Image (cartoon, rainbow, N blue to C red; front, side, top):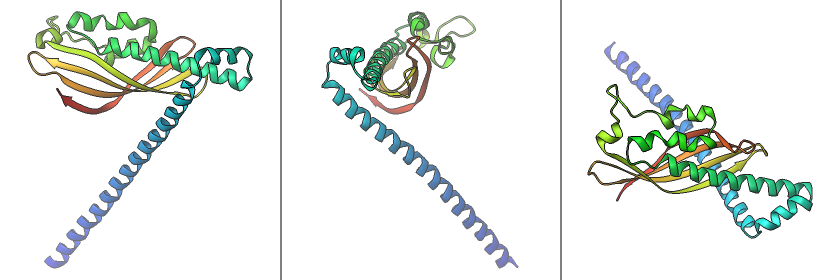
Length: 211
C-alpha cells in the first residue's frame, strides 16, 4: 500500500515537471521568436538608413515635389522619421538629466510642447519625489542623473504615426557613491501631425555597468 502511494506521488511529481518544462519551453520559444523579429526589423532599418544616407535631404525634397507618388511617400516618411528621431533625443536629454529636486520637477514643463496630456500625466515619467513633509528625495539622497547617448530606430506604419525604439544610456549617482551607467530601452509613439509623443513606454533595462 505504501509502495503504491509512493509510486503515485512520484508519478504526480514527474507529471508536474513535464508540464512545467513544457510551459517554460513555450515561454522561452515565444521570447526567442519576438527577439528574432526585432533583430530582423533592426537589420532592415539599418539597411534602409544606409541607403537613405546616400541621398541628400535636398534630393528627397525635390522628389517629394516633382516625383511619383511612391517617391513622395518615401520622402515624407523620411522627413517624419528624421523629426521623430530628433524629438526623441531632445526628450531623453531632458528626461534623464537632473541634479536636484527642482530640476526633476521642471522636466515636464520643459517638455510639454512635445508631449500629449496623457504622457505628461504619466507618473512613471513625471512622478513627484517629495514626501509628506515636502522634502524631495532627490535632494535628501543627493541623487544625480545625466543623459549620455541614444540610439533610435523608427518604424512608420503610416504617415500619421512613427514608432521609435530607443536604447538610452545615462549615468546615475547617489551621494558620494560611484556613478552607475544604465542602459534602458523605450518604445515611443510619435504623432507626425501634432509633433508630439502620445506614448512613452519603458520596455526594460538591458545592462548596468559601474565606472
